[in-house]
Image 1 (cartoon, one colour):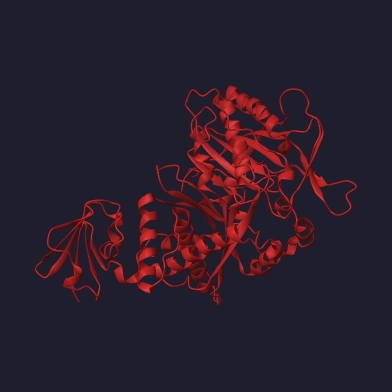
Image 2 (cartoon, rainbow, N blue to C red; image 1 turned 90 degrees about the horizontal axis):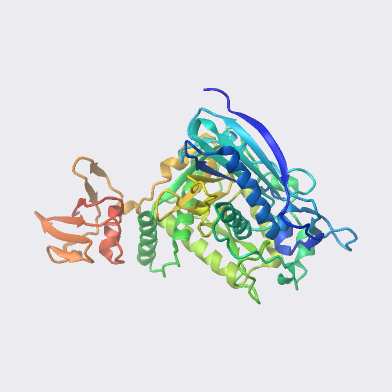
Length: 522
């Protein structure tokens, strides 16, 4: 296999279309400023091209539509700087006529594994497809890379997070894509930073207590052998996780947490990631910590008083930092803990955000490692059609450096979520071994016949009184009956919606279509 080779063919500056826009200075808010120390967000969109695709015309259309989109999103063509003459260390986004976004056209010679695959791939092979931000405080850069061996195009977009959050950046991408495809673009952005009040003086507090480069080293790191892979959770799998969590809560006598599909997915990934980290560290002779931290962004637009418009271009998110201590346990016990902690963290971040101690809290948990989240299924990145089809794969390449989990709607399936994970080889292998939704240990299958699709389980607390009358249909999904003192359960669907004890008993059936299961009495 030849060594991957990226050739830069052309780099131009794309400016906003139409008459020159006036010079503008847009102040950063307290939501924006603490992102200044973090690396930019890098996304790569992989597209398949038709054999007769006109590449010169396609690239020209991308540039022209980018220019049109930048007219509405002109701050992204500017630069972040220290505000001249400010009494304290204030930053703003400064736009002057002639400012623009670097647009690079490249060609990638690569004959290895498909870069748009879900399987583990070398981060170094993908990272070249995302452009670097030029110096001087640039906020946005774009790179269109032709993948000739696979008749594809990789569209890399790099954005400084201090300019806007994921909702703002993907609104820009949807506007650009719709303009290029000749479709109706979304509503234009709202750029007025005066919508964000700062009655507590949070900007100055954050600016004085930003994470230093030394502290950031524990969060932002990239081993040379780092891998990237994507794991998908279907709608049925997400439902099974929710059911396992609810069933475990009932067994503990607890109120089940508010477990949305996103909370279920994040709770499951957190458990798998923690156990993978533990296995790798134990093999290396370390890992004594039992406490683990998780952070996800909460959009405060709708919760602000007054509410901030959904199309606001800027940051309006804050982290929900969650801490757990029981994730090393197998099965539904750790799932319940993770999902309950995440759900409670979101509720707290919405109802009573602790803005005044946010930086201190981040510095407190950063040295021990925090699994964070990048992206959201709400951004609909797989619907970004520039006129040559939807992307076959979307990667947030920057998670390889930050250690975050990249979250998106599932591009291959109609329902479900996909999670991008980046780990060293040993950690990736450990994660893959654990990344299969399993019921609690009491329900784990101990023998299986692939030929007959039958599954044998034992559970000491099964008694005849727990079983419905013979041949009774439960919710048109399960048929229970005794035969030769053996309970037989037949499943006629891949999704169980009942919250009964029988569903929890048969949670392992979620993944098996039209199978029979026999559970022996103790």
